[in-house]
Image 1 (cartoon, rainbow over the protein chains, first blue to last red):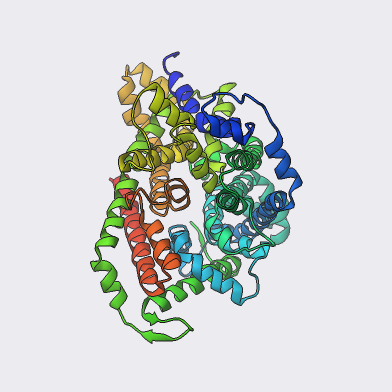
Image 2 (image 1 turned 90 degrees about the vertical axis):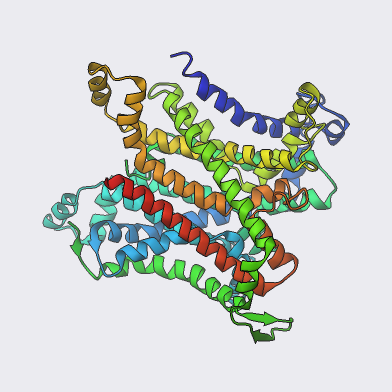
Length: 265
Length: 287
């Protein structure tokens, strides 16, 4: 038994090493970073974090990212719910093809779409808004949300629907007050995945924004190139981008294992 | 089993409209560019299938495609077995389970360019933890900005770091769904560890592993941000994967026609291979 737990421990150690280095770097002064190797910060400083929290171009980056990620999560889950219900309960003309077509959108490389997206969202006047990024991320998040929710909904027996109708529930009332609570784990998992993929994606978010809705990750790339090589600042900004993800995982920790099976196990 | 109901289309309609807006219009733009030549000023000339022929014959495209398949193949060969092994040795219940799950999921929630930047800092030859360790403690000459082999190993290790957890969590979800009774029965029959794995655990994980392989294939085949931030495609062209090359052509040189034709070929290859994987794996299921 002891020998067996060695593998996960080693793996987690491997996962934590680069993260540790990023965090350690963020507490060092630029001088210390460039002057040589040190395993722990010698002159512990909060200067890097202070810069981020007092400079609007920095902290607005975080606010922008959080706004469009939340918008995207809400849109994706709301439109995916009825669609997933339709796929799990009814058969209709072209349903299988439609489902597969939705999934193919996850296969399209974002790099392919960068330029056309820029032109499209400029043409409809949404360029540089949070809504543009939120809508663009729907391309890969909606198919995923439909896929996950469909898995969870198929696990709910049809008798539940039928009993509710016999009891005189109308469809909207049944859906909101009976069906949704039954699959709330699925909704949580779908929201988690939408949050995750919208939070980590950068290429489209960067292409669709200039000033007003610029995501934090784009601010980072710009700083890395323009202000010389401020590694400490870069590390601090990177460390801060890990925190929202960590908080979200903490909330869904009990559903994670099931959620990763997309409800199908 | 399912009721036939054409009105279900109304439920799907919002999804259809949103995804179609995001997928069809840009896709048509790409198709449009791929058959035309432009010299700027929005003046276009019909080019037919010329760009497609040019791309399919170009050595540059073949080289990038080869590197892409090498990269995807390598990470699949490493991540899938490694993920299964880790999932098998994880505790099934108790205090450590949530801790394992949360720490393992963490790399996947870090923005992709931060992943690249983090590995960049981590591997700097004299001031990065890994770079320092390799060069000064082990005495191996390691510098991924100059040595193509080091750059390759670094992007593969980075991807293993970033995404093995997805395979772990998927396999783990498959494993915990196996009822205890199966194991007890195996114990009574005196089954070896290997046969427990082969006849109980593996079949139960098959479905989630199919999802894992498909997701890992699609995402690694489309990978752009992490290697771009880490190596920028270099040294030379040695780590220029398909999408990095594509962006170079489209936004760097602004050759929209060839870039668009390449996008379509790229997309077609992804679709074809995903479909092959999917049919092969589901066919095995039926046997």
